[in-house]
Image (tube, rainbow, N blue to C red):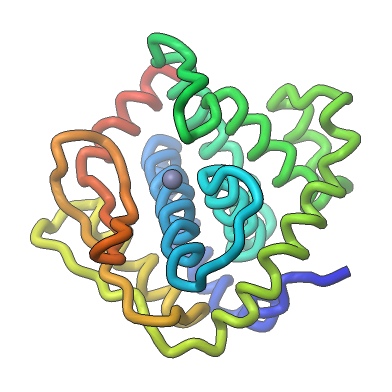
Length: 241
Ligand SMILES: [Zn+2]
């Protein structure tokens, strides 16, 4: 049984990041930051899959979601990780409630499915301490049974990749023409992640207005874009929860 060794070896940095994050005492601001983190880690998953030419036996979107949950589990201190997981789950719930339908043809699984996958995987990372979270977020017993094994498989799959990444020299290069809370948050996260992981090459991370609340990994430019519209979108979502 393997664990994600890289991150375990970098506990002090994780604690630092958690300290910054824990200063956010406003629930809405935390919801925004948690979901931006979750989305950024997902896009990072696409970048790593592309640049490290990882074999993915299934939907790439699911694999990126799995990495995002593993990073939340590993990079945050225990209590903070739970709050991020709650917020990210509520983010999927809000998307599901706001949706005008379920698009089964989409490359992403339905938001309800992404919600349960996230809750199950996060619960599976520590079933002894996250029982209450699983129950509060309505994870059915039928699914709970397999979550520990699901987490172990995810950890066994991504663990060696993350370990390799700790030795690579490429870094995230933060670029933003705008100064706003999204760019400030992503800049902080880039700084933190650069101390923890490396990449096969430098990866540009842009925060900019895109006309929609979205985030992308560009296969041609090999860059990540986080749209600044995400903030107002997440605040609107929070107000409906
Ligand atoms: Zn994606």
